[in-house]
Length: 336
Image (cartoon, helix red, strand yellow):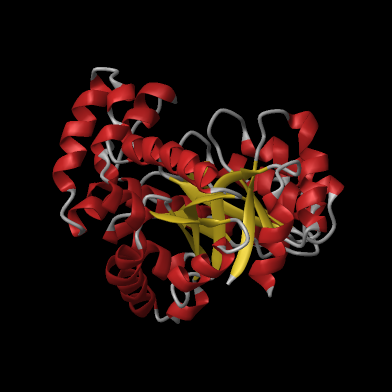
């Protein structure tokens, strides 16, 4: 199991120093989310100022971008980083695609499959000088003149991860992806009983080995030097869980544990803007199921015990900040 970090990109000016610090501490990869900033700008800076640490998106939203735009961006990042790029894609949810990005929401699993297939077709055209020809339901590509062809690079194989919760997208992971990004609102039971079996179904259908798929997850961890620090972080996580649990996309995770009704009540409060009332609906038993709580010197041991055999890569939900005291110890103890 490899320990990665999520990069805080509140300021692009801080990215080079933060990326260098993560590399120096020995973390295996740094992932950049797409929330309130474009992740690819940060990755360009991280690639330029580091040498060994892998870089990737966790995740970039697929549908607002043409696969051709994604292809160019990631081809350049792969060349700049000398083969360290990992492209993580996600569908987002209907409301955001339609109302935040102004795009059409349609058959997300089927459309995401075409994004991945067309990316690999485009990259094959650039690397091997093959004729560009991809015909799908949502995307069609048939024009690539020399003027617009960036040509081959030294590391043409770019791993593609996708975020997945429901069984159909998990099966898509097994069928054509290099890895899965598991949402932080997960439990070991959900990974074991839903995610892994459906990855295996997809892999078997495609004649692939399920072991060829890397399982990566962002996890909630409440850590600190004192009990008060740990409890304070637990309350922050409780609020974050209440936010995620209000979204119907993640209801299957709650249903598995008998908490499905919470999704309805939390969703109703979210619709009324009653965000401050939502954390109180998350009981301690639910918080404990989603969270590892431990002193910072012991949290690595607890994380390994919880996810042994389930994950290949693990990232804390807490964004990496080189000034926080616990990162060096976490890296050291996780490796040992």
